[in-house]
Image (tube, rainbow, N blue to C red; front, side):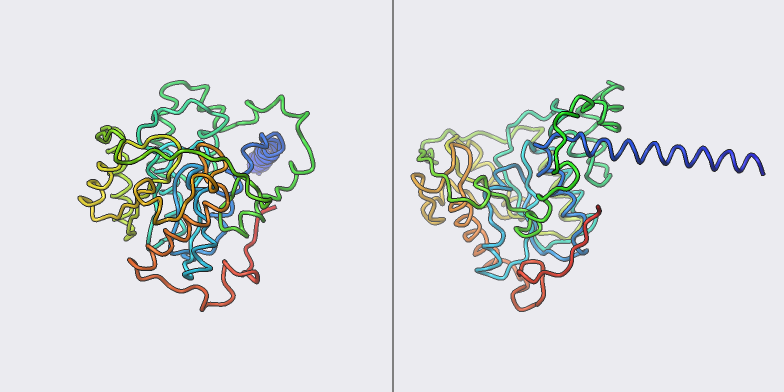
Length: 335
């Protein structure tokens, strides 16, 4: 009997230490990671199989596609699962994570990530954010690629308070409660850089598709795209690849169009279709690499129309209450 009591006592101590470690980590977490972590939390607390379209990619997904515009104009029930810092391999981890609880009809995947370096070293950014994503083969493959045989990096990944132990001076009221979760729940994952204020405008020049040299998709990137396609097909999800226009040149338009065709997917190129989308380079950008809120509404409207015309989607406006209305159904967040 005494051995059982000792084992029970040890288990209680371990549980307390684990709980305190986790709580301490949350307090010391850098504030610039709050949006990414909150978005994952919101995704994980959505009712199962509640969204029909999910957006994946970097900040050019998160800040470029206003999914509420899709809902308002076409009744499309979408969630924007884009995140900053993300690379193509991390995008695959997000894809696998979302399929744990959602089985969307369509995955809309950003392609500006093609050509980015794959092994990520920023453990206080992209890598650490993946710790909140559900376990999957793709997640373990990603971590192995990033860390190799460096044991200490695995340790700090599992116990990130080691990285953030000097952040005590940054603790504030928001460290105990994140207002970002409610914001992202209201916008269904979309977050513009203006944070609801008047749109910031910077006039830019969008490169001409006709004058941009076209390249082949690098082999490592093609392998990742293939795994995305395979994962979507396994889950019965249709794919729309898209490229959001910015001031940088995009060299993979022809290659992505061909890749989509060969894989029975769709492709939208924002450079070629700039006028059709209605984006004005003198009014719809916040900086050289991001649309402002006005541009995000236009791109959201354009992609929403494309989805409406090419896929059989439910008009969520006819279902009340729903996740996209002001009187949304209750979504419970962990304290």
